[in-house]
Length: 402
Image (cartoon, rainbow, N blue to C red; front, side, top):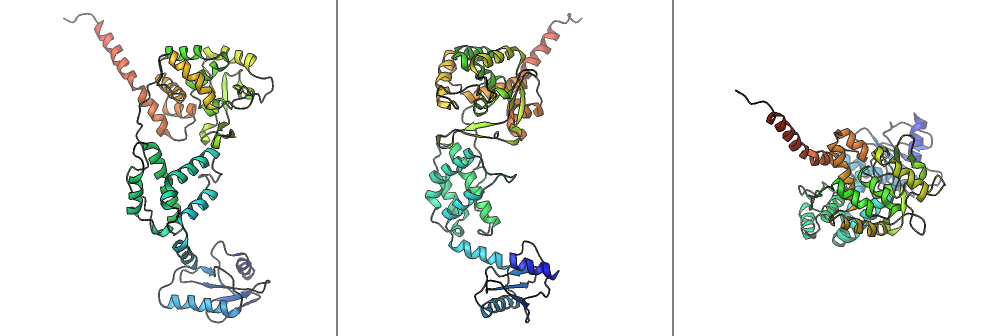
């Protein structure tokens, strides 16, 4: 046990340890001192919480280290003690600017699974920080953030861009949550109900099958399969343009979605799908399998890593390049309101109308939570009218009652 305590004092404790005598340390009354090989002194003591608390830094002389112990003992005697690490955090909060804290947060932020943030997420956070948050709070001390100050900032955001406003508030709330957890704030000042959510300003009207066929026929031949994958398979654009020959399984009639491409700062960046559930196999409706085979023969290179939809100069096709062709095709179908992402919405609704359960939709669309998939089941609720009509027709054709 003594060796364990000595090692923890040398390396810095990562968990509570029990005090005890050790070689090279001195004990005189309260706490203990230890001289390091560097010649500096380390101090530690057992606090009222029965945990060992080392000094936040080492000392040049033994007297300085003992003076720190005496100060800690006085705090305990006066019933004014708090763990040294917490007091360091409070001292830090008194001087650190919110801008410095935000930069540190962004540099060390990870996902819930402990993985680095995706490049696109980092790019979005950077944009919201620079445009909406730092102009108001960059030089403000972290401790100066209060609910009223955050509320004034939120009310100053442009109400004509509700999505950006909500996302900026979400990021601000995440920053303040971390500051609260680190004891830099006494509580999270982001307390505005509903400020982080946004109601869809424009309801998406799914495309009719006839409209989808017109759009597909109006696209250049080498891009027609992209419409099938976007609509009937409900893939995201970034997933489609990263598909390669090896991702197509003709024997089983499916597409393996394993990667996606985004364009943070305008540079194509390949990464894992948007969520863990985004790694999925999606079956292609059998009626379109001949088109898949034809596309592989005519428009895809022979190598297993050949892109299905490469740009003319090679590499990934940028959304703007694809968008020019798609815009012309949707206009030909009389649907100038339709975005390419709305094809995914259409595909989800078609799947729901075919009888797909919530779990089916989550798997097909690559959703980790049921909330998004629920929208498509609701969108398919018009089927109830058709069911009622069919039931009515059954009654209508009954023989007359006497």
